[in-house]
Image (cartoon, each protein chain N blue to C red):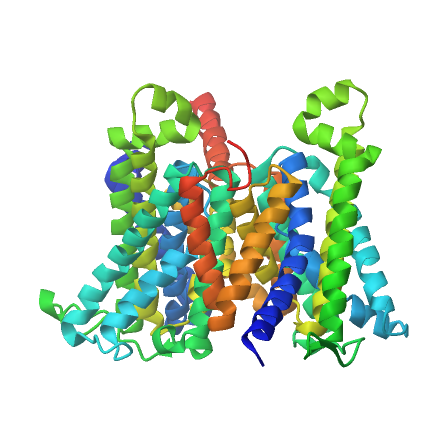
Length: 286
Length: 340
């Protein structure tokens, strides 16, 4: 393998990591930006999404349906949690932190009871590899890359060009003023929460065949999303996407040379230093 | 009543309260399971000390840490590194006391360094919680993977317990009763130190930083220094608890630095009652004792119960057990006053 091919391989792998990370972090960022709620159960949304394959298999559906089932189921779970609990916690970041951690513990244990504590493998729905620039690359990884690019683009476009997106950005900037202008902020909150949950669920379904599925797999992604929000700031979607790019890129680069845990430790150290220099994240204007 | 106030009030009173709680726990333990159960109860005392350190951060300092176990675990590992052959730094006899001191010093220094970046970076409130949570989570992951230093998934066992031979006290703190007494004395001592710190003018500054930091800045206080001291002292106390745990259980693993212990401590403080050292201490004892009792019945549902406690304390949050005791006490006092 030539050096160019090696670099290319690394770029593709990093792209996959970034894509997944963006899908998870967007939800966390929107929810925090809109309603000052830090959702510690966000990692569990990803975990439930990953179990979408298992659910689909148990329901006797064929391979691909897992990918559709996951965001729908997780979106529904998100809706229930938002309506029953989170709506009491708008603008109370510390309380939301404690309550959603409670949800997180309950969901992890529930998954452990329902699906068993052992990690389960999920068969790849797309076998084999394609020839890319003279080297083989996993079909499924390429598929994940494509799906995440498409979904993130759609999400960004909705928030940029659709009326729903306009209203959301209005609430984002000034909730009181938006309400005065007749925007139903609570509906925006619910919708944003459900979309964030569904995106995390989709991310879970996408990563599942590349990893194993386990009840406690969410924590790792949650912490990575924190890093994204710390580096990028939670003030804007661009910040979250940029932050995910930086974190995913650094992770991809370092984990090529050493372990992924060390990569995360170094990223956290960098993030803490970044906080000292740029308190509001590097992608937010001061 | 003046007797009660004289014994349990004031600076030394915090120690007396811890002592009283420990004696009650000892009596209950021995009554329910014989002298051997003190071994388990001593671990709960250690966790009670750990809960007090988080209460200093959260209840008094207003800094909710979701990663307090990082410092507990670092203290445990600092003790372990100096008393075992793991890193080739075994100091043997002397090592246990030096290890205990290192168990305080290492977490305190790490907190000072971390706090420097975070507090000057204006990381407060929920962001402080998630950064500390990330620190705790990643230390745990690092510990799992780096077995040469942290023992990996197997942990490190065979850690010697603290020896007080240099003070002319023979034997070690290994025995069931000796271990319990030693942990009690250390916890009571730490409570007195924290209470003393909080009852000085520095303690008033801590109250001020919690209630209205901007105003204190306006008055010319260097609030970042105040927060650094609180963070550092609380982490030192957490580290002491960790070192005592290592000495008592003679086993450490990466889980001691992890998020589950970090967040469980938050529940202890909330159940016991924030801004009350003895409340946090008793909170840890009660929640752990209930968990121990429930583990016979339904081990599967313990985490679900813990999660529900988190939700309950947000939705129906109040002063915890201490708040409850205080209102009952005041009602009693009123009744007595009316009768006389």
